[in-house]
Length: 121
Image 1: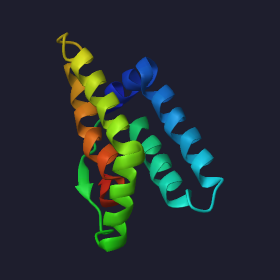
Image 2: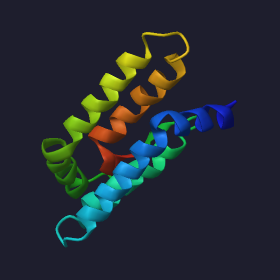
Image 3: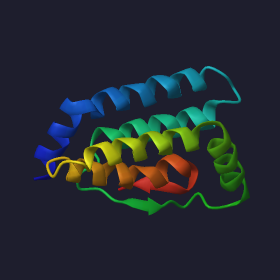
Image 4: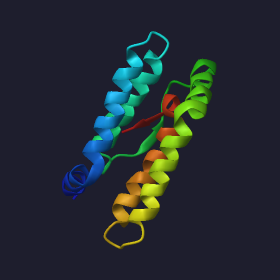
């Protein structure tokens, strides 16, 4: 069932979102200062490729540097990405068929807000 969900997810927008995250991450990696943020954006892109069958867990990168980077991420990128996932979830939740996909968008919100302290496994 997870394979079917992931295939439908990719066909109906997941692939485009993942490509956007990865291209944005590569763009951030072109600068020295943006490398940590670019790597997290690429991580979000990979997580967006196949969210069914996985769960968001707290990573081992807890500490003051990860917290500082998460605060910078929230101010610059995270809140916009989280709102995009929330808006997509609300639109998908209108129909019964879209509920599993809305749930996946809700699952990706914690990673979009705090990518330095979250992983998808």
